[in-house]
View 1 (cartoon, one colour):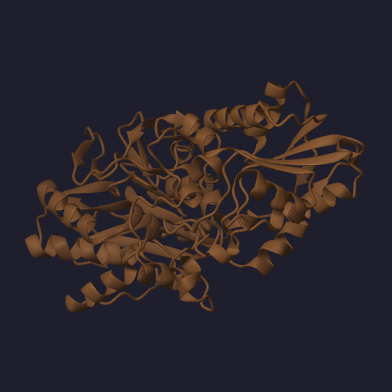
View 2: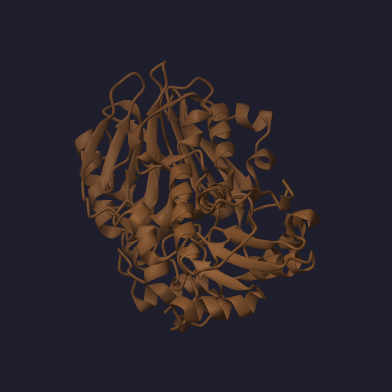
Length: 485
């Protein structure tokens, strides 16, 4: 999972790109990078490990000249945590700067194909093979003077070779004009939207919040299996290339996206609220009773508030989050997650003491956070602790860009389902009860055109055993191949 920003027609594009990246810092904290395209047809690149404010200075931004460019914040699910794996990537023949969000599943196959074409990647990041294949397909057509039709052919062939999830943004010359290009995988698993500013500039981003911070108006999303061409002062050109049934990642709505973002034509906040209402109905049907509803900050607040309103209970802020603490789920290893968790959250005693408390969280993946939270709540003398989750149980690995590739890491993995699973996890966490949102409840709110493979095991893009093993070993070098199954 990563976040990208692309801009064209903006004076001092690097400054606007930096602002856009800060708006999606929650999508990746490992590395950040910016590539700009100047009026003389040259690319300028700066990237390094760290968060946006740590990587870029006023001086570094001043070296990134031009009115167009692409930028990215990285959360590594492929490749290492090194500067060499940071995005964007550039190629000089033809001149392209490219960044992406997602997870390419057939990386070994693509690298072998590139070697057969006399090319090698210099990183472990899956954005580089996408860039090299796109460049190679363009050069097969002609060396220079590429047209929109040429690009459509090259992107179509790239899509036919690359499997997995990807939303891509790139800047290059098309029809002898600087052009911002965005395209998504055929199922549209990872998000991408675009917008226009009053001065005619365009932007393509992972989340609409990056449009807001630079005064762009949301125009639409990049359709699955399609390409959008954006040029300053001109109307967007949308080309449908290889569309398949839409399967947008529902975990974006549940956990990753900011609540003020708009995705798949709807408000993330509104979806989280609706999930909380449905969860309240399912919890109430169990015949349980409580005194207060408390959200695990920050993602869970809309669902928790909706649940409290639906149940006629007070909503209270019982967990206080350290604002300088990172998101534990996207930490690179378990030891780091546990250390960060100790810094992340403290409790207000009076909210919990002698109360029957409903604790609302977005999801349970490894269970580390919830087990520690319940333990901390117990220290404050509650009458009961009811854990509620506004998503189903995560029972299957994700191979499309979220760091849960091994079944051994998933606390809910296994044959147990429904009440049996909830009772097992309640005992594991030390809670009085655990309630997951049902799969039927998720579909009622989010619809059928979603990727919910982490809940159901139904993968929209097939991932064979060899590919699964490679993904697991890439993220966990000591993990056995079978861990992905």
